Every structure is written in structure tokens, then in C-alpha cells.
Image (cartoon, rainbow, N blue to C red; front, side):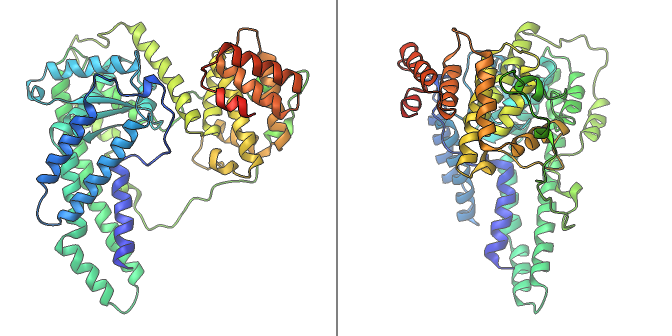
Length: 479
């Protein structure tokens, strides 16, 4: 195995844990733009320059490359609408974070900035640069405010303990340190099994780094509980938060997907063969190169719960909620909508359609969801027409829920014309004279595809009259 290939593999594995993957820029609306009064970007740049001046002499170029990649990714995402600065979700979590910091003298001198990421995976992180980050995909899963408080305490603990810089230092030492370099030279001089020996070295290196990561998680849990005990929040909810994290790989909503209910109409009846299981399936690598337990960056949540349970006072009378419970419920509901909006912006049409349909079964008259479903089907139509469906709609995979696989089978079974017909008649059935901008655009686009010229012309003119500065003006003019 060449040094270049080895470095490439290990850098890829490491960067998964410290930075989000690059995603094409959005066209941000005001709620995804950093407030003008916020000097966050300036502070990040100052911190980055200080870090560069104080890098270790040994392997300095490696450190520079990693920190520069991390800085570039973070600023790219901040400048391109990947974070949420709304008036409901962001202030809710900021109030929790501010309370934690104000009640813990250890954090008094730490000017920590909270970000709400639009990422769908249920996670949170300490990002360096005095930033902690909560994903919208986790925000929608919380059951009470105290659970959110523990998660923020945990990320503040990572920040306080400087775990991200420690992880970077360990990575550089693991890859560029003398023991690894000697092993690589030995493999290069060997006469046989160079690839196998290279993989063995890679595996050993990754296992060591992940073991260190699990140690950091245990340290952060312990310190997070100390932080939480100084607040008004119920520390018992630390245990329920960890139990929640143990279950977030399962879908939030598990009721039956309302495909037939949504897409059956007198003018275009639902066809049962659309639900036939498709022959498409992602192939998952079964090669036993890796020990799954050793690849985990976090200890099992059951072990984390046991470790904290002995430190918790079961009789404490602290609060599950500090802010009104109604505000919490509104924030969680808004997080559901923001997740759908995020999937639509990134053109993950299959996933967006799935989440929209599930929520529509609970909110059948929600016009935003209706419009989003129409936009997804129009996007899927264009993708299939251009032979690019796999870019926007997943293939079914064994790890997917039964409900999500059913939707993917449904989409992959549809012919091009059927996609347009389903979307068109769905919107036609839900159309009223007071529909939203999003709905009007989606219905106009599908009317164009369906070759209904008079209706298309009426919808287009209605849109331009009502929304002369609307978000879809350029798109609708080009239809």
C-alpha cells in the first residue's frame, strides 16, 4: 500500500469526525444568514490566526492543513445558509446555553457561541473556535428541555476540555509520528502482502483513535453532569437523554406511510403495482476487515447511562422545563418543518417526500407540506427525465426502515409520465384560491409538464401578480 493511499484513507476517516462534508451553496433566506450584529466570522478568523501562529514545530504542515480545512469548511457553511438563525429554535437553545454558562463559574471566561445546524442527522458537536453545534435532526427528537440541556452541557464539556485540539494532535502523531513512519517503510520494503499489511496498520491506527474518542465521550459525560447539577434542570434527564440518543437511528414517526391515501384521486386512481417491491437494492460491504465495536467513536449509551446513574440524586426536585412547555412543543414542531425544508433545499427529494408524507398524515391540511410534496415530485420528474434519479432519490438499502423502503420502491417503480400525473392531481385535489407561493409555483410547473396550457398560463400569471418579488420568479418565467 502506497503512503499516498494510506494517508488519503486515514485523513478521510478522521475528517468525518471533525467537519461536515461540502455541500453546494444555498440561496439563503434571512433566517439562514448570520445576523448583522454578530461578529462570529471575525472571531473565528482571529482564533484561526492565533492557532496558526502557535502550531507545534513538529509536523507543522500537517497541522496547518487540518486546521485550514476545518476553518474553510466552517466558514463556507456559515456563509452559505447551513445554519439556522430564526426567531424560535435558535433563541430557545441559546437561552438554555446561556443559563448553563452563567451557573458554572468554570465557563465564565469562555465566550462560547451556539450554532443550530440544518443537518438532518441527530447529533451535536463541539467544533473548536469556541463553537458548539446542535443539529436540527436532534432538535426534533428531544422530549423535554432538560434533555436538551444535558446535550448542551456535554458539548460545553468537550469545549472546556479542548477535546477537538487533542484529537487533531493525536491524529497527526498517529499518522506522521515515528512509529507509523517506521511501519510504512517496513511495509514498503516487504516482498509480499503489502496491501494486507497496510490495511492492518490502518485498522490499528483507526482503532486507537476511536478508543481515544470514546475516552473523551466518557470524560465529557462526567463533566456535563457536574455542569447540569449547577443549573435548575433535572439531572435525571441526563439518563433519558442518553437513552434517546440510543434510539435516534430509528425513525421518529413510524406509522404507515399514507401513499394510497395521498395519491389516490377519482381522476387518477392509485395503482397497486406501484407498491411492488423493486429489484433495486444497495449492496452493503460484508468484508470483515473491521471490528464494528472498535470503529465506534462513542461508548454504548447503556454503558454511559450506568456510569452516570450512580452520580445522580433521584430525589432532586429540579425542573424538566424552565421555558414554557408550549414553547418547547412549538420549537420541536418547527424543527420538523426545518428538517423538511433542509432536505428540499439540498434536493434530497426522496427523503424530503418521505418526511413530508409522514407529517401530512398528522396535518392533512398543512399547505406547506402539500406544496413541498408537489415540488419533490416535480424535482423527481426532472431528475428521471435527465437520467439522474440516483442523485436525488436513494436506492433501497437493508438498513432503511420498512416505511422508507416502501417509498423508495414506489418512486423507482414509477414511469416518467406517472410521476408528473401523481404530482399534478395531488396538487389539483388540494388547490384553493388562497394557496401559498410555493404551492402556486409547484402547481404551475406540473401543469406545464402535463401540457395543460390554459391552466399553466393562469397559474403563472397569478403567481407573478401576487409575488412579483417572489422566490420562484425566475424559475416560473423560464417554464
